[in-house]
Length: 358
Image (tube, rainbow, N blue to C red; front, side):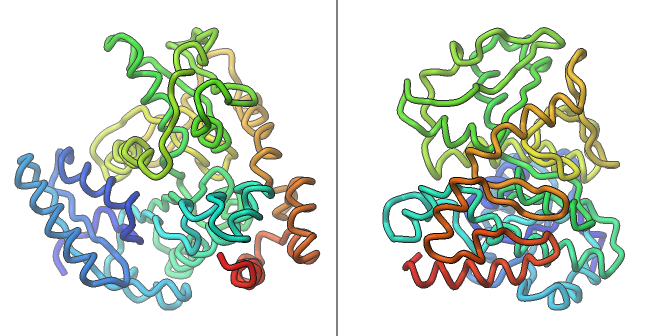
C-alpha cells in the first residue's frame, strides 16, 4: 500500500477541489494524499489535475483515490483501517449549502426563514459516521470537519466523538482584512468571527446587520473592522476560493509541515471561529492578551440565535424563530434532538425536505 496516508479527503465537491489544488501547489514535503468518494470519474479527474499541478509547481505531494461508502460507520471502517491516515478531512454533506435559502423551492423558503442552523442534522450526518468509524477503529487521526463546523463540531464534541477542528468560515475574514493591511502587519492579525458573519457579508454593501467581526494587530484591537471591510460583498459559491484556501495551512501543519498561525471554526467543538496555532499535535487557541477563552466563546455564542441553533446540555436546540418556522411543518422536528440522535434527526428532516421539494 506504500507509505502512510498523510491526508484523506472524504468528498469530491468544489470546496475539496480548492483545498486539493492549493495543497498540490504549496506542499513542502512528499505528502501522500488520498481522495475518497463514490464517483470514479470525478476522482480520477481530481487525481490527474492535482498530479499536474504538483508537476507545474514543482512540489512532491502525490495523489490517489479510494472508494468510500459513507452509508454507515461500518462501511467506512474497512478503507480507514487500511489507509490509517494522519489527517481525515470530512468535506461532504447530504445538504448542499448552495441549495438552501435561494428561493427555488418550499424547502429553500423554509431554511431562509428558519435560519441556516435548521439544516444542522444534514451537515452532521456524514461527519458523525466518519468520526464514529475513527472511534470504532481507535485511530488517532486528526479529524477535520468542513461542513458547518461552527455548529456541527459542537454536536460531535458533546457526543464524545473524536474531533480536532473545523476549517473555512472564519478563515475568510483575516484573509480579507489582511489584504487591506500593509504586508508587514498581516502575520500579527487575529480575528474572531462566526458563521453568521458569512451570511451578513453576502448581503449588498451597506446592509449588514449585527455586530461585526473583531480583529487585533498583535494584542491591540482594531477599533472599526467595518470601516476596513464595508465595501466587500461575498459571492455565494465562489467564496470557497478564499475559504478553501484558508484550510490548507491548517491541514499541512496537522500533517507535519511545521507550526503555523491560522484561523479555524469549531476547534475541539467550540462555537464559532478563533485564531489558533496548529502543528502535528493539534490545534490550540492563540487569543490576544486580555481576551480569555471564556470571553471569546461567549462572544461567539451571541450569534447562534440568528443562525437558528445551539447545543446545550447534550441537545441540539433551535432558536425560537427557527422552532416556529419548523413547527408549522413538523412539531417533533421543532423540538430539536439529542446529540446522540443524529441519524434519526437527519432522517426526519430529510422526509420534510422531500415533502417540500428540496
